[in-house]
Image 1 (cartoon, one colour):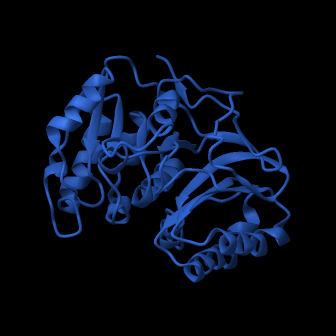
Image 2: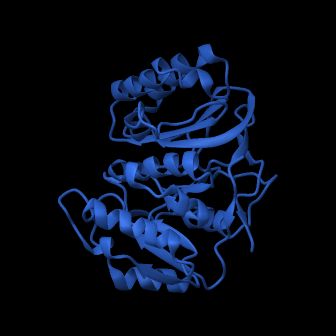
Length: 306
């Protein structure tokens, strides 16, 4: 079982790093947002840098990631944005350092590569959740923020339902119940690291997928890639997040074609990913998926109070 991380303590310090792409940051607004919620903000150097489509050089972005984990004063790490860049860091990650200093790590999209690598080689829970610039400072509607902090602060634990807003109906593609580690993220990134030492360990997992700006035929191609690689045959169930820009009827038809032969539960429409609201999910945590009842329940604590 993937281990829990220390809970985000009251009046703690949140680190902001940019391990992927660059983005302009309103520092005053960011500081005020974090302070209003009772925390201090530590902004690392790479947040201010830009190297084309990257937020600083690989060396700077890697240093910030390592430094944020190593610093005992840092209680949680938020990513500035996604974009592209994290796969370039994977073969330089110090997993011994990360394993010795587990703490909440939050992001999505391109950050998926780090979720997969940390889960596989450092063995602790990370959080597929909102990033500071586009989501939290972008005033995405609730429960974007409350979903994040309820998990980081330990208000949700083993036996608790991970709630989904009733305003956004879910779709049961295939009914059934399955238990396993919740793992995945951005579908394009999951496929991009296939064939590397950082590819998803799909055995018995509840696979979570989301994506943005990919037409339906590319979603088909990505899922077919995972099927031909033998990954889909290993999963116990599937939770489909937001697939932005794709016709929902076409998506449901593709999901039915892909997963019906596998006879596993599949639940679609979960508001996580490039969407508003953007709900947080604990990557690596053991969960129970009931696709028929449209429920996801935590089967382990994801944070612990020290």
